[in-house]
Every structure is written in structure tokens, then in C-alpha cells.
Length: 342
Ligand code: PHE
Image 1 (tube, rainbow, N blue to C red):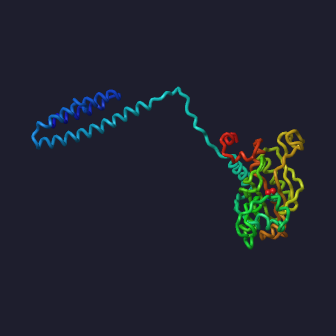
Image 2 (image 1 turned 135 degrees about the vertical axis):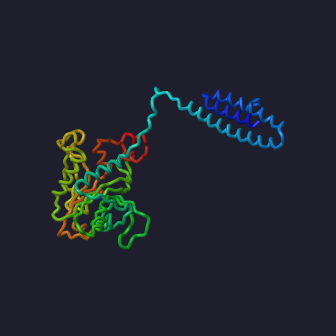
Image 3 (image 1 turned 90 degrees about the horizontal axis):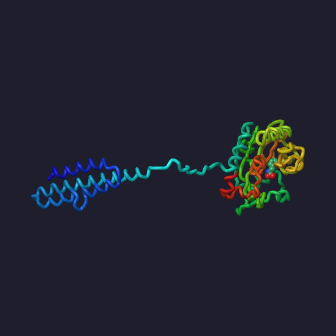
């Protein structure tokens, strides 16, 4: 009897490894486990055995059955997965969507690396700021109407006795004093502060949260010449070799003299065309740091001088790429139909 069970087992294992299709496997299964299969018949023989033999052979039959069942399941899985692996190489491949960095991330990287090449250090200062850093130390008298130009968001917090109200910084100029403090009033300073800024404006060309980059250099004998040279370097490296900048007189509380910076138009190179009208496109503000600001940062204005400039990242990058985004708010909409084009 033991021999019979072992024979069934050995034969079954051999046939299993030969089986090459699911239907063959099914025939084999019926042949062994079916109602008149080999195992069923062998089990029926059990009752003719002596009690001790009955027990021993019973255990053997059960063990063999379990082993074979496991082998059957394994074989079935193997045959099934072979069926699914089949594929048609002529079917066009599935195109996986390719992600990429957001336009603003690319702009931040590019702008910082242009300035890092000429020795500027990238900094980043708090978005939630005190009035003192955003206005007070930047030579804004209390209640001066110039503060209104910045359309500031104030935070609902108790005023600091030293620094005044808490606010969302409306410009990266707040980093000027913080950088002077970080260096304990000891120039040379070459800072590029690139960060988020906030203003209460929302329309096609304004968004309440945007980015600015602020350059600041403080050292001995720094003049407008250095400012102009730095701006021209940026223009030709970022926008293209032939682009130059132009300074127009302006007013900021924290710079004297102050300027608005224009960049020569790409199309007419400054002579005037339909696109730009006068040959120049407006970029942002700049100027020589006001002596009061240097003093507030612990720097002696009789020994040191410096310049600063601050522009919007979104605007500058769109100008570079020649992008005409009809509504600047779309940049932050997370609508893939828009973003995949930028
Ligand atoms: N902070 C000014 C603004 O937001 C720009 C500026 C920066 C002007 C530095 C002069 C010097 O408009």
C-alpha cells in the first residue's frame, strides 16, 4: 500500500513538470484527485487494512496529498503568468507624463546662479516680519504715506515694543537690515536675497504672494558705477549678450539717489518699436543705500557705501522667456494645462 501511494506521488510529480498548459494540468488534477482519481481509489482501500496500518497509511496519504496540492498551485501560477507575459511589440508604447520643475523654481535657480558667479551669497529672511525691518529701519517715518505704496498685510498679533506691528513682508528689502545685522555691521556684503513677498493686490498682473530678488552690496568706495555694472552683467547673462540696462531717476525712502531700472528691448535694441514703444522695458527699483539705512544696520556711512536693487522674479522671468501670460495668477493655479506650457 505504501508503495502504491509513493508511486502515485512520483508519477504525479513527473507529469506535473511535463504539463505545458492549463488544460493539461486540469486533466492531471482529475486523474489524481477526481472522484475516480488515483488518490480517491487509494483512500477507499484504507478500510481493508489492519488498524495500525490504517493509521500509518492514512497519515502518508494526507501528507502526500498536501505536497501534491501545493505543487499543483505552484504549477498553475506558473502557467497563468506565462499566459500574461505575452505581449504584442507592435502596439505603441504607453507614454508616461514627464514632470519638470515649476517655472518659478527654474527662475529662482537661474537668477541665483547668475549672481553667485560674481560672489553674491544667497540669503533668505523671514516672510513673517516686523514693521521695523520692512519699513522702520528702512528710513520710513511713522505714518508716512510712502508706506501705502506697499499695500501690506498685517498679522493680528500684539505689537512688539521694539519692532512694532507684525506683518507679511511686502518686499525683500527687509533682508537688507537683517543681513547687515547678521554680519555684525562688518562689510564687505554681497547679498542676493530671494524670497516670497506679499501685497494686498490681486488682478491680472498682480498676485498677493509673489517672489522678489534683492541684491545688496556694501563696501568701501561703492558707487553708482558698480550698480550699473552689476545690472548690465545681469542683463547680458540672464537676458542675452546684447541687452543693457538704463537707470531713470525715481524715489524710494531707503535709497538715495533712487532709480527705476529698464532693460533694452530685445526686438529693436533700444531704438523703439511696436512691442516696447520707447525701446525699453521696465524691470524694477534700485539705488544707493540711504545713510540712515546703513546706520540702522550698524554700518558707518562715512566709511562705507552701498547699492541695492529689488525686482519681481515672476515678471523678470516672463520677460526673459517672452511669455505673455494673460493672467499672472495662472502661474500658481496648479492647472496642468497651463503649467505644462510654461
Ligand atoms: N523694495 C522695492 C520694491 O519693492 C524695490 C527696491 C529695492 C528699490 C532696492 C530700491 C532698492 O519696490
